[in-house]
Length: 380
Image 1 (tube, helix red, strand yellow):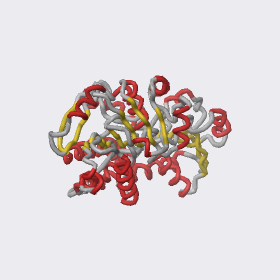
Image 2 (cartoon, rainbow, N blue to C red):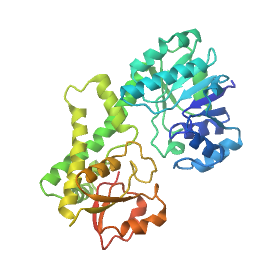
Image 3 (cartoon, rainbow, N blue to C red):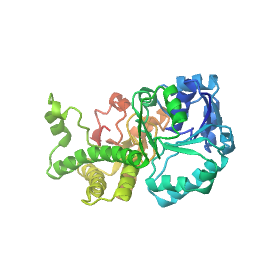
């Protein structure tokens, strides 16, 4: 079976690696995205963000026929349309997502297949199914949630089973063939199950990171060095082998999906709500450490992205921390090697001997900070 695929939102962190992967599997693929800057970079063989092996995969995909457009009309000849745009628990953003899906459906050809890969609720899925244009065009809808760690798409895409949420077991011939061509192992569930799995996974991950921050908060309140104690406790101790380090918990998925889980299923024991509070307290404790450890209110903050060795600023708690520091009267200069030019580093480091490592990029370990006073927020 031959068909064309369009990836809406295909110039982003989820859509671009997926688009390259699909094209490189021999399937004619088009990227549709309103981000003109990213589209121009893609068409110039330039990755618009950091992703393992993206440079090589993008060149290979473009050379074999991958195309990138800004016009939604380009989907009209595609048998499969995949939506990879980021969503939010914010109602305004959710409404815009619904409007986009309506526009996508209007431009899809009759009898084609729509795959939603973004975070959605069952209400969103039902609203798509109940739409007049969806019914009249006889479109098949599948919810196939993204579960790939950012930066590791080409390491994980063919390793992690693809969850496929569908209304029933019918009309799965195209979707089954599509994922078989991609060499994905598939697991079919209903819509409700697929939604719960996606929201549960990221809420659970948020809970893991938040729980370790909870113990760090308690240690700080008792004048104990939690990082030192965690290192000792986990030394050759298998039951703490995979324990995360404490640190800032952010990014485009964990907070948003945890809030969406709470909105969708409730929080009868206020557990998720308390995770949010724990991470707010963690930021406040970090500021307390700066107040007590540094001799003045001038700080160099190293790291702004949401996680180490990434250039992604979306929902970065390092930026939230920076805003709090400024509100608390600190004078802060920032540097991030994935955002700033390297030649700026020396002048930034000259600003103060007080160093706050907010996002622990590996390259920071090579910096000469021996004469500085250093507070490390975390290693996430």
